[in-house]
Structures are given as structure tokens and as C-alpha cells.
Length: 104
Image (cartoon, rainbow, N blue to C red; front, side, top):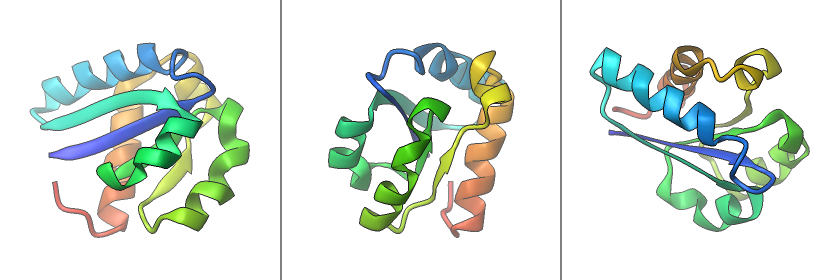
């Protein structure tokens, strides 16, 4: 199972993307857990996740996340985030995990 965390300012603006990602994962037959939360909560719970994806509006936190974990962390590109492209976001998470050697 691939565990994907999405972080934004309060965890609300990513909720639509989470839903679209869950639908895309089901269509692929990919078993995953996807949640959204604030960047503050995300930093506290980072060890529970395989991949961390930051909303563009909190991209400033990338270096801080990278400083506290070896897990893959990336900023979701605005074109994927803005219109909640679930399949593209799932592919991004899978690519991040594979590059880091995470099995799922």
C-alpha cells in the first residue's frame, strides 16, 4: 500500500484532489491511503507516510520538510493542483516512490 500525504495551509484545499486521486487509484487497482492535512500537522506525522506532496501555496515549506525526513517530498505543479487532476497526481506520487525505492 502506498501512503500519500497532501499538505496545504489548512488541509482543506487539497480535499478535492484527494478525492480525485482516490478515484484514479481505484481505477488502476492501486491500493493506497491518501489524506490531506495542514503543513503543520504534516510535519508532525511525516513518518507515517511514504510520499509527501505539498500544495503550490505551501511550496515554501519544501526545504523544511526535506530537512526533517528522507521521504520523498515535492510540490504539486499548479496545473495538476488547480483543476484536481487525480490521475496525474497519482502518477507523480508513484514516480516519487519508485525513485526513492519505496515498494507498493
